[in-house]
Image (cartoon, rainbow, N blue to C red; front, side, top):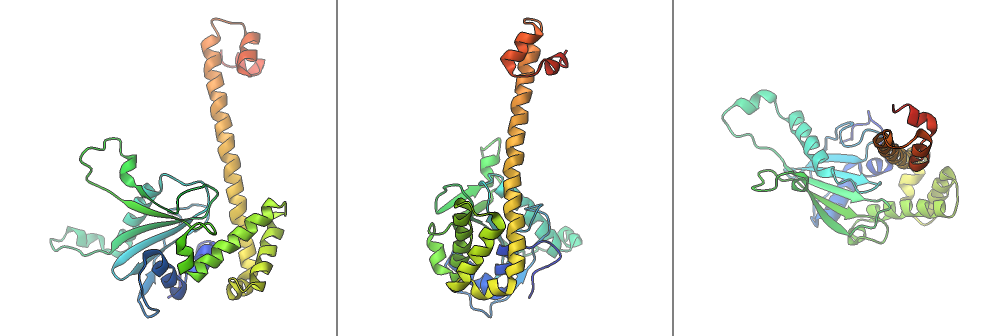
Length: 275
């Protein structure tokens, strides 16, 4: 069994995108005891949960559809909705559309949704996000979807103690972050963390085999996260500017252009353009 390689991997999906590591990880998260001979099928979809890179692994195990996501940025409150859209596509993928119109009940895998959080926010070790939190009207809820969120930052979760690969991966990311905090440039921080981990027998075989790809994948991932922070701040700034323009418009019939510019922080030319 091999994961689909037609899309961009992340280090997380490359590490856990094989049967042995995936079973170990799932056993640690759910407290199960599936053996290496357990049937597992990876059916990850492209560009559904994430558009920039693939941080999710979708797979079937023992009659379940498990959608497992590593999330590195600020906790996204829309994850239940994104999972709902994702699992609908998964069912479309495995079911003949014509069969849903037949009278006989179609048996489908039970969905399970898991987020492994590895970002900067200080969140609890475990929490549940619910689709119903997004509903405008909450009386007599007919549809629910629950997402288990686990904080896998190094030293933050008991789950790490149950999976050596997850613990090692968490430490590897932590090591990179420490080098960055100490002022090392991103690529050198990744290289230094790889050297550290190999010396300490942390993901040694994986890093020795995939070191150049790991550098490229993480360099892209960290760059995208930094870029997103910039985009978000720019969006906030643009929003504030629009608010200042609205204030300026409301003052046009009351104050002169120069005074409006001073009060709103807009240029005189920007105020004139609002007329």
